[in-house]
Image 1: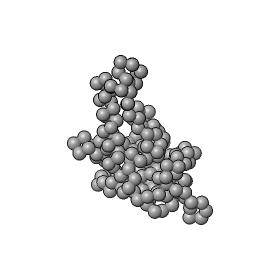
Image 2: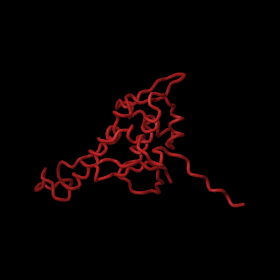
Image 3: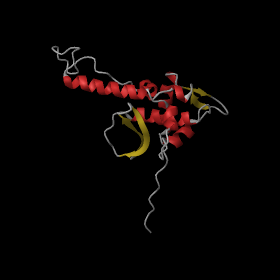
Image 4: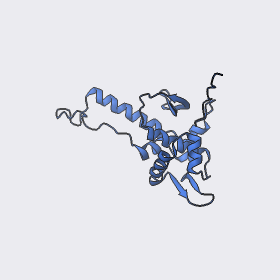
Length: 177
């Protein structure tokens, strides 16, 4: 079992409607665990805009294993989304304003969305002319890209909801005496 961020797309408004913490039970997901972890870390840092957070603090708040988180933070740093400072009072912080960082920025830094430009089956008769199935799949990817590009970390944090966009530990089940 893992805790994660669930993105709900509001097709009518063409944007992400809300972020809800959910439990994932080895579900098939549109995004990899690395993307999930990167988004958790970035939302956490956005919530503390301007403040430096240690890897231990981010790991504890987002429930991302520290070794995995270190690798994710390195990728986000190379993409210019975060920066690190060593020493007392050091840690990791957002490079920019949470209102200027989109979900697409984070996803693209870790694992960019792959649009369908040519027939995925390699059919020479199709080439760049996608069949109706692959054309619709590409349009779906484009819609996700558009929604993610239009949603900033600040919007995720500002949205009125009873669910926080970060993880909290589920209550432990008590052992029966």
